Image (cartoon, rainbow, N blue to C red):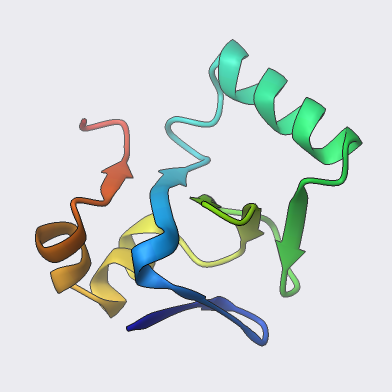
Amino acid sequence: MFLHIGGDISVPAKDIIFILDLKSAGSGVATKEFLEISQDEGLVTEVGPGESKSLILTTEGAYLSAISSLTLGGRSKTLQQNLSISFLTARD
């Protein structure tokens, strides 16, 4: 099963480690530092146009997507149950 994360990019669901909501969880110092270092080292791929709303970390790399973490989660409701993927938001 694949999850479409924006643009022309789909990632294998089994490779997803977590999906992070940048609006709520992305404001932390550690998250900002991780993103800055990852982007500087070319480890993050920006997917599609628009402001990034979520960070998708996979076994193969990291992606910034303009699609919200809730929408990505809704696209494949069974991902969290079947693959134990964490959808990190301010409520967690």
